[in-house]
Image (cartoon, rainbow over all chains, first blue to last red):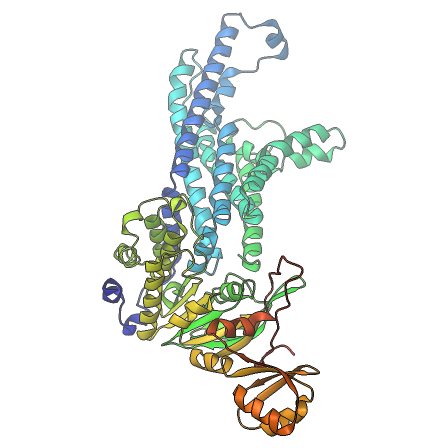
Length: 291
Length: 321
């Protein structure tokens, strides 16, 4: 036990050292270490970027094909009848088109990162190190939201760059300066960050990976479909549906506001309000419950 | 110093910890002993702020754990060796814990060396044996060089060398003036490590005394006597340090008198004795007796014809009537 006695300091060192103790930036650093030291997390983040870029490239190729068909008159009759819309306008949302799948991956990632702390027991270590609880959960939320924002932003920027040559073949490429395009690219990140906040809150409330992921999918994918099905029942149903987190979030990345839909800013505010509400509920519940 | 005052934890209708009060002093190893389900872990979780008490309070160095600005420097705890993300390496787990308090990586390396984790520190915790997990938990507890160390069943899963190491560690920490509080359900372990014992059963403190007092108090000469007129036998025996208990109309248990004197007294008074059994108590027996009535999950003999074990009751302060 010579090693033990050698490294055990004398009792006089027990007085708290100046500058020692919990600060939010230290907790942030701790959470950053946690995110970057589990390999599956890093792989999931990297694949999210790749999948989103791939989807955007496919989307661009689709619009280019459609534009070509319209130009040379080879559009199939049934599509013609539907009215193919304007590929040139629709293509403006190409950079954010990876969100369809990206939000699912980010929602799962956020739920897994927090719920796995409960399933592995890690949360007890976390809450002993940061017994105030709220700073630990807030720091994790900030780290995951920031990572998600960067994932969205990076994917959208790269998607834009890859899409231009594809769209350019049909002359439907566009500049970043076009109305709403830049905001849509930035909001691809904002959308994912807010998805992450809502999902992490669900993970905190449910403490269970499967339950959290299913609930997140329910909110972002199933709820809009149900509202759609019920929209015939009463006039207020489609009105209310616009304020669902996912629907409002989609308006953030839409480039052309049609009719009575929310604007980019309104969409962001509505989804942001949802995120804050979920997070506050999660923090209050965690403060009161046993770990 | 850890101070609990009428600390209570209820889960629904079940009371896991029932209004316990105790003080854990610095400079010595205090053992927290009790059968499984007695409330040891729940008490420790409340000390560490993981469970909110249903009543009462517990403070460490004067304030609740969560109110300390640098809690890892005040208290280090091993509550559960499994409180680690299985896919993270031991080194990175320690780094993440250390980062919350700005503890440098040099200290992380120190505790890795100290706990003998060097060879496996970069491996995923999921592949650790129970013993390695315990060592990692102890490493986390020592990370902040805390004044108070709380270890819940620290020798669980350790090999003999590891058990020895934990004993020395606990004694060394206490010798340095720190508060050391360890739980176990093994009396034999406590006998070797602890200076002071707090015994808990069914959520209540049933003994709180220096370990020597508990051994002395429980291993006094004890004799079981069957006699036709117990009272006539007891009257002449009464005196200092002698106590007795009537278990059945003709069965008594006498403490503090040796068997020969009882036989002599019986002869003199003409009381008929038809059983005289000296009861030898080991430390383990003492503990079993202390906690027997308080064991939550009692095992029963599988054989229906097995003889009943005699249940002895010992008057101990603070015990449920």
